[in-house]
Amino acid sequence: MSRSLVETVLGAVVLLGAFVFLVFSYGKGDIAEVSGYPIYAEFSGIGGLKVGDSVEISGVKIGQVSDVSLDQTKFLAKVTMEIEESIKLPDDTAAIISSVSMLGGRYLSLEPGSSEEIIPKGGRVEFTQAPQNLEELLGKFIFSMNQGKDKHKEEEPKAATPPETPATAPVTVAPPAAEIPAESKESPVAP
Image (cartoon, rainbow, N blue to C red; front, side, top):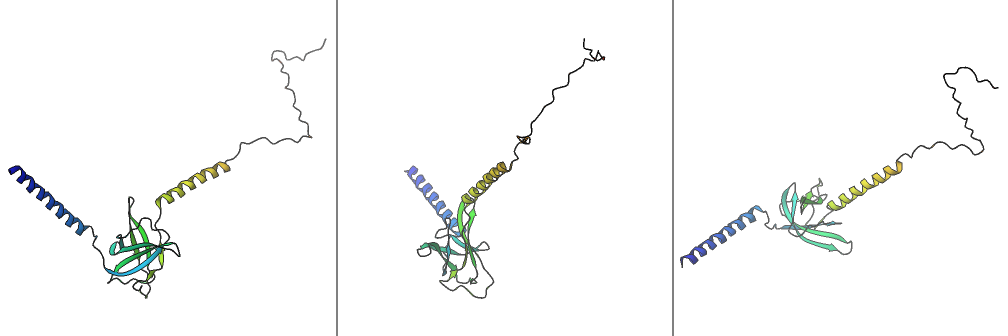
């Protein structure tokens, strides 16, 4: 009987610890939903951006992505976001999809412009930049390095070859001079 009571108490302590950890991580994780006004932006590629990802200005969360869909007339990704009511964005704001780290994770970064006009509720962010694809950039770099090697091989100087003599000019080579032994300095006399 006492063994089952100890196991029950220990199980309750573990569940309580898990609940405390869940509440702590929820508070620190900044995953609370943001309610505000919707705006949207269109991108040629979103690189893994998904619903629930944060929308930030200068690293401060001001909203979240609420919908990602495909505009079937322009064939662009339409990203709808909810922005805090207190944030009023100029109509020349730029939207850039950025990486949280090299291992992945995306967020939408907004860079406000200096216009006097404000993006209305349901309005569009005009200026957008799709995320950089690391694999594509690496492939381009490797390809350009290989192109440089091939170009270097083409520009390599060829071995120097002697100029050809014209076929009409005969080439004569003088026979080697006969060596006279050093002991006899007299000229040979014919008998």
